[in-house]
Length: 306
Image 1 (cartoon, rainbow, N blue to C red):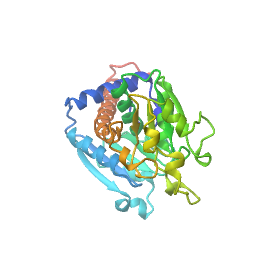
Image 2: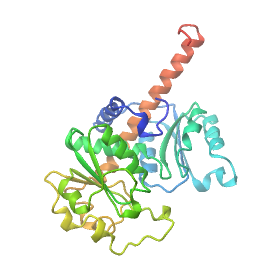
Image 3: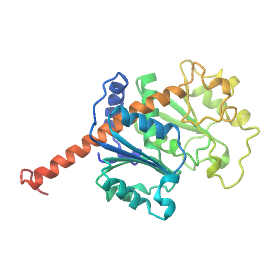
Image 4: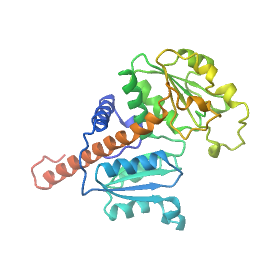
């Protein structure tokens, strides 16, 4: 695997391999990628994703270049492709990119030798967030079979919801949604929050993405009507957990007291994000090494051409 752009490019075997690598990373088994170069190009705001990639890359002993929107020549009219090619020409082996155009990285990745990681493409996908969420669930339950996950909130605008729903169902979990009518996708099973807390093993809350809404979002009664209140949390199944990709709007989608309660895995998700992103980078670099080795063998006439 050269790039990670979407969850639908991963088989269950590939996902479980990443879960295993993450587990070993979390135990302190870090490989060294010393002598390799990572570039992080974030054209939309980010705290957790950007910084967890930075920490992951440094723990892998990579050289790291961080670029934010205001530092990019894209502001001068340079295309995203030319920015990527520039970083590749400077020596970047892997580029982590967040930008607003859904699906824009697919063509770019096909035209570069560097590995491309999608760190969020507008309302498209967020595969690395999905993978760290999968690890958090697997770490908790040891399986995806017969696990019921409710994804609640701004489904329509959430790349996290899109990536997670696809992957969880592929792995055998049951996925349902809870959202106001205006924020629903056409597909999927929708339940009330009351039904969600009573039936789910995982309640995964989403931030209201006001920046992607064309009309002003009413917020006054959202928590009581659609959010996770303390009263609703008291009805959750024994052993059920609360998740959130963050940033969390306390008192909006979740009562502030629940963010760090015993059921919450919100900060554990963040911790797991570093190790999962280390595992992803290692896997991509292994894929590049294999492809380069195969190319060299073919050039030497030691590998049959197709």
